[in-house]
Length: 394
Image (cartoon, rainbow, N blue to C red):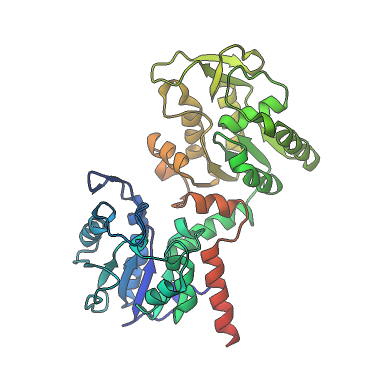
């Protein structure tokens, strides 16, 4: 891909696709991390002398209809404070604000625009007409083939990758393509079915695959352990068995707990009991890994040189079942290994246990992160690669 640092931006109109899809509460931004992650790209473009138009989506408004609840006005106000200049907000059918080099404007929510989600050529051409250079910097939506991510890249004079997108792809590349070994990947979550491609892809690439949450329950069931009333996927027990057999043939390890924390219901003051995996019975529901498993997992993390983390190992939102994920987070934070973490639940756990500064790289993408580590080529990345190929052959 062509990258932004290789393009002359001086006095040029530059359209940057960012991800400002931040959580809102009563009309105010409640968490600014995604905007903050984009600021270095914006400031770099300013230093390069660009006239900058930013675009993003927010939420899921009805396409073709303006809805004040999904307006980017709060983002424009926050950006103005961060950049120390007024950041005007405008709509696509309005005149572009008059900008000098280094100044910034914000296009209103692209999901108000008819054709955005269907990747309409008509809309893509209108967006491309705003600029001389298009910069795709929003990794979190790079897996979406939409007018503002893929379509505009086809019609822009120049299309390139922004620094944030580059950083995301480099981090994943460092974990999966050229890692330092041993590599440990932690995959948690409720269902094997939602992460089957991920588990299959990772097993070929890592040395130890740690499974947690409901996913681990399905693997424990595959090994013949009793489940009580725990969440697991009976129809995917044969799949879990096949993965366990494949791991053995490849001389890889699929890490599973040896003891678990069970309860009968998920409430903040639930009665939690530690049991051996052999002793789960009756109305027991597995909600976390036990102390022996926590120690075993910490030892596994300690030996790793590269760590990939996607998903908690227990229901950490409830105090009685939070210790497994808490101690996992602390073990990764204490490790000297290169660590990459991504996914909404994972980032929430990292924030809850306050280890943000101890993880090497925190991905801004949820679905995009998952698809990238599944081994898929993201549509927005492919669009940039195709544009570069076209430019070279012309």
